[in-house]
Length: 378
Image (cartoon, rainbow, N blue to C red; front, side, top):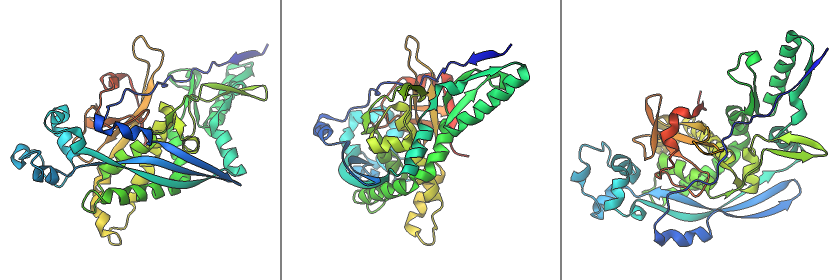
């Protein structure tokens, strides 16, 4: 007699509402009315979006000394390179620095407008449909013997992978029975897809930052500006399931990075995955730079080689039903708080779920031992 198995889709719960973010001083509040807005126009097989976002930059330490906001003696023997941005200062003194220097003297920014055209051709539509969800009945199968069951589950595992999902089964040697999103797989899939967009946006950010940093753009400022770009998009929950033509589909609580950009919205999973894809493209591009052809970018390449980033998937906190997913970034020097130790190295927690700047306490860092750490760099 054949047996039927229906594997419940126990999608990992890493969904959360917008984070309680660090708030800028009152002088900046008027900026909220324009940040993160987009204009949209559709023509044929393309969608042109005009993002109104924000570039963050950190005051240079020599400028702080010149303004007499801090003395050179105060940081003597603490900073090897005084030409760093004030993020290095914040990382050493933590929140104490805000008691002596107003945060708007350290962290500044400027509105900028960025325009990009996205392809929505049939080929792109088919790709997004493929990675958007899996049909729930894919997880239903019949078997007569253990060997047949192993064969069926192996086939399901391969099919799920094609949709950007991980199918885990103790029968196949996994530690649990579950279906979850393959974040590393989606990261690798969407890096080449988003390469033209990310490179174009990064050039825009670098050129904007150069106006404030003596003609240079620090890697850490670029990373944080990319974070601002994603964070200022609207928070929306994609939901775990939807029905189409009478058929039920599982999304894994995520939109693809391409979909997030097209609609300028997403939840913690969707937005933080997009953020790390953008970091991955930027990293690969800068590391591949020919220093002889671009000598002014040699220092930027050295900084980038010191960076690393991961995704952290947290189970729900005690008393809660939702977990969280966000990025952890190892910066070129000391980390801005809050930070966590991963493999003996300090990583800054950079959550782009809501209005964003690194340096606020989310509480998740204290639970780092419970998190699944997803390595993205090979």
